[in-house]
Image 1 (cartoon, rainbow, N blue to C red):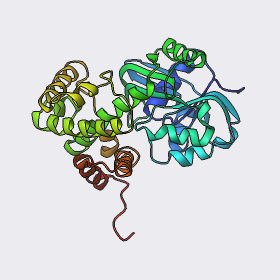
Image 2 (image 1 turned 30 degrees about the vertical axis):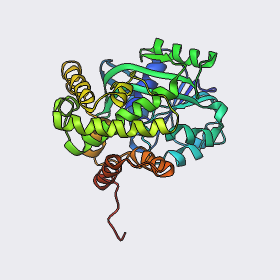
Image 3 (image 1 turned 135 degrees about the vertical axis):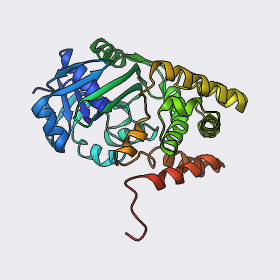
Image 4 (image 1 turned 180 degrees about the horizontal axis):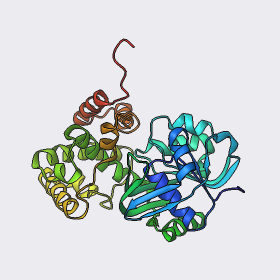
Length: 326
């Protein structure tokens, strides 16, 4: 293949959704994958079910060192091991690179690998699940949002947004992408912590007043961290984070239970990706997300006790956790 339009690092749920849609739309796509997942795509292509139902052959590259360049790099792996994966691509040239992973630390890793001028901000309000048979269940298609960092838009952003959106995965640009990334992260810390500890479908723990209270307190603590870093928050997220941070705790709980009722009616089968990982014995993204927030908290001398407590609890549940003494 000539220089790909899109190199997608990771052929899990969202990487497969993006790769299959972009390839079907006629773009030159290369999925960077390994092991049995790579072999399966080579044999069968990428099969999507749910919101989109089709099978698309997509080229696979097992050896990242064989990729010399691509117009756009999309990082769609789980966060554990990201630094090592990017190290294998440092030699490659990209016009733009962005990550749809969870946690704000992703942009720092990309900038270290490829330079800040190459990196775009991005977040995905999009959900999919890699099924046991290798097909991907596409469950939520709200939006992938992309923008220049720390703020602004550009012709390269608009082109990428147009191509992804036209392929069938909803996409938009934002001049305030860093604010959106952190607003999503504030919401995600609460959702991830409670999803993993309750092991319930998303709507069930959202509508429960007790778990909603825990989520509200974690979100409000993470919002304090964002504000200490000088990052403005917004309500343009899965939860109205800015209002939850500035209003009362009771109002925040009501916002969460209302989101739960909406989820019950629109996506009753939705489960947070970390819960999917836990149930399948895969490593949790705990150190790169909750751990990142706790490290920043300590650097700034803040006291966010619930965030620290849930970091320790979720880390203890991580299937990748090594027993003491090993």
